[in-house]
Amino acid sequence: MTQEYQLRILPEIAANEQKLKEYLSKEKGLNLRDITATRILKRSIDARQRTIFVNLKVRAYIKEMPQEDEYERTIYNNVEGKPQVIVVGAGPGGLFAALRLVELGLRPIVIERGKDVRERKKDLAQISREHTVDPESNYSFGEGGAGAYSDGKLYTRSKKRGNVDKILNVFCQHGASTSILVDAHPHIGTDKLPRVIENMRNTIIECGGEVHFQTRMDALIIENDEVKGIETNTGKTFLGPVILATGHSARDVYRWLAANNVTIEAKGIAVGVRLEHPAMLIDQIQYHNKNGRGKYLPAAEYSFVTQAEGRGVYSFCMCPGGFIVPAASGPEQVVVNGMSPANRGSRWSNSGMVVEIQPEDLGNEELKMRNEELAAQQDEQLMALNPNLKSSQLSEINSQLLSVLHFQEELERQCWLQGGRRQTAPAQRMLDFTRKKLSYDLPESSYSPGLISSPLHFWMPSFISKRLSLGFQQFGRSSHGFLTNEAVMIGVETRTSSPVRIIRDKDTLQHVTVRGLFPCGEGAGYAGGIVSAGVDGERCAEAVANYFNH
Image 1: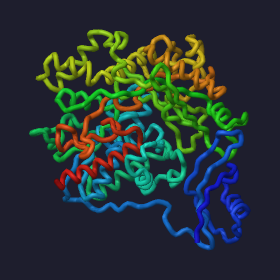
Image 2: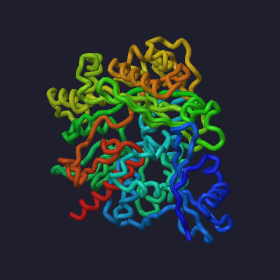
Image 3: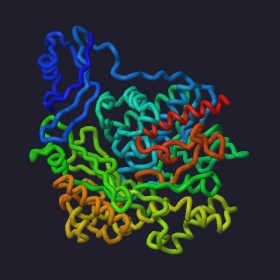
Image 4: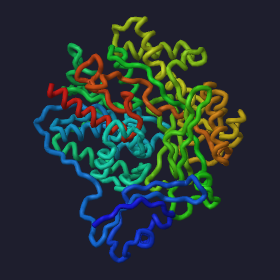
């Protein structure tokens, strides 16, 4: 038989199965010799007090061994010869959409502008070594999407929007550790996730689907307000309804949609910096112990949120024991992101520290286009996508639909200029920033392209820098030792989410005016991470199945 228990125990007991059995025997009255096995179902750490506890939900097997699998398997059948669906993008939204299509008896044709997940790695190394960014193969574009080489964290709050457990189980079926089913903040790790992604791709192909790399969608084929397929940079056309899962950095897609009257709207984002502390310092603060995390606890996490002048200021994508990486997706950009290997074993811990931005915040003179040349470039890009646009239409697109996108681009360009027109990132010590002082030297950092001391408090838009400073001061008051010059701010973190929402019907998930187009995931403005994008991908696949049935 089996018994399940909710336990609150010390970390050294939670880390050792024999000690856990002895605890169950002593506290729950079980005969130690009868406990043949234990399985941890849920695990979280309670570090609110000086004594750290681990909360466990445990299943004890009494005089029997576990018979069931640790995860639920999904059956994928052959879909050769079935109706085909075009999935644009091989990030989590696209991959989970494709796998769900297979489940539903439809044939996915996955189109990915970047390279496969292994070949991508070579181009990522070039960013650090040569300071060159391949616009089609980088931390944003390529198999696995932005999450493949920027951490693989699976924590989400969007449990009401779909079956999160299904997403985690599919990851396990394709090679992820079953610990992701257990931990409160599950994490695969940047070093482990590529193999899982490859296995997902292989499932799609083995079942009769297709995956095309280095194939960029250049245009939708639209006839009578219905999508018939896509045109690509290879000259090949793919026909079928389209799940558009291009990710939050596909700015060329947003421009094409805007120029061709496919309804989109500007959307709020969050902008700021990557903040990096020594991992030992974060461990000491969070675990209330000068010796840090010790032998049995993982690298400590934190989560901060406050309000400053009517806008949220908060930590984002916290990477304990991680690295900061160069996440630009094109020329004249410096963008940073964070990642952690599975063991979270580096000497640093980082997070995005960001300020909420709404489209209405971008109307003042400080934030308008810096010069006529940049404005002319924006018009030229749109005209190339639709030569029939009038000047009044260009103005409306640039000032309204793409205003947040332009703000992102300009901030990333300013960061590139401050960094010496390379991937060297401008940086400032945390306490110096709040005191508006230049940092005359910088601490050692995980950011491999290198840092250059820069007065972020001076050149970043004041409505960001002032709120960040207020937020840091609040976080320092609530967590003693957090506001310190041992921490370094690295600019800029701008890719927290899409600057555009591609409007869809809430019931059918189709675009509001173009049938057969299913905007999906982070890039469409309907998800905020790997798991929520995967959930949205599955929902879009189900919506396509309904589209065929009607």
